Length: 273
Image (cartoon, rainbow, N blue to C red):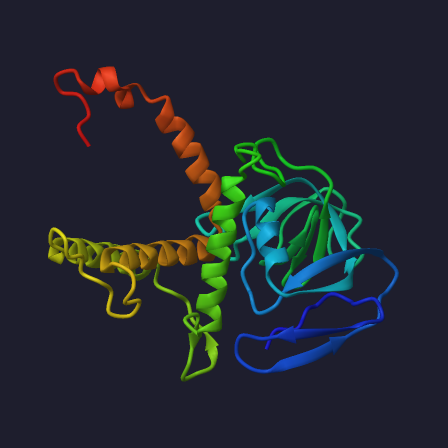
């Protein structure tokens, strides 16, 4: 059972754990900087960009007064490929109220559990980001407003991951402990859905589309593609990836690739697929 290490300003916070019922945790605040942070109901994964705040607001949230134990400068977000605790923050800490660090020490936080603007709730503490390192920041520069595709995609990924956790796919059901998911296995499950979509398309004939056996009003290939996207969203959120930002950037890159230009594709040896 996880219970936050931060002090709550004279309130009681209800926490839903992945392994059992709700529990109440209350502690009185000590002297320190107090800020507001939102925690998501039953979603124990945080997100790589502030566009994910949409995901936080989308789920049932609970607002509590949480003590900020320090500020971070030159902060950057770390992904699973950089630190096993990710999503987490790396930066220089200042004003540590717990007396653990000197001003200017470089630290890596524990896993981010929630965020609200420049305030971050980690597994054991809460921090306010004063400045971001070059190339890092709360809002992806590639967010193509007003459509905000990156935020919408990251919201979708967060929903997929939350549903997966609620269903117990990240829990060892026999031991009641967190399950360390096998990423290669998760990738293989994604391409298994693509293979099933191919099967649904292959078995469809002119004038008679093979319908899905579960969503019987939809074509099988369509539903299997949806399954693949759900698995991709779940994995991306689990790894702390900014999937939406990456898609927006890659589409922008592809739009200007010389080998994607029609005149170059028509040339001998041009890109065919």
